[in-house]
Image 1 (cartoon, helix red, strand yellow):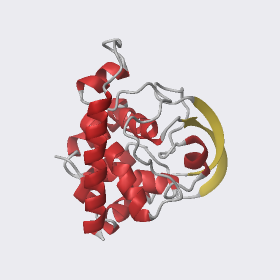
Image 2 (tube, helix red, strand yellow):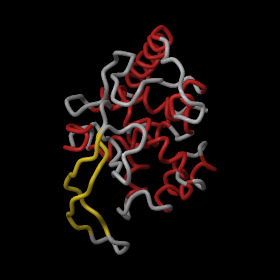
Image 3 (cartoon, one colour):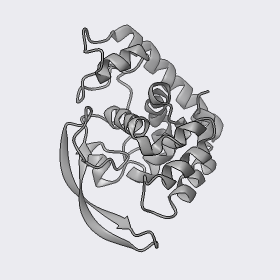
Length: 218
């Protein structure tokens, strides 16, 4: 099965790169804005809410697990190139946070990472309330409702996730371990990404089970 995933991912990534190169990018953008940073790093330069230029299927809840992983690779690898987040970590988080794309948050609002709406940010198109659960430090979890970011595409969700991690100071320690995805996860969790006490175990378990490390970039 890893061979099938690698083949699918390679084909998707190659097509993504070829089509993105032929589509061109938007014209002038401010030198301190996300579009400028995107072009400087060879990113998917779209205004938030615009459809991806690649035309490739985005991850969604109707896909098989292999299809979901394959459809997540391009966005996760772009996040690595732009922001340094390990590819295996991004894919595992998309799987866990969205329930393989089946959660209401990802189905309705294309939010694959549980990004809350503490300000809409440059990539989201709205903020909407969804049911969720939170856990105390002692591990007691309870249902609640929170405001989450809504996106026009899954690609914008991936972009926002990477940008959030890279620009939030409390995650700076994690970025000392971009070549060690397991340690990156542990430091990200320790810094407060999730209240679930088993978050590190769950993410690294997914990374190992589906051998997501094969998609990591240097």
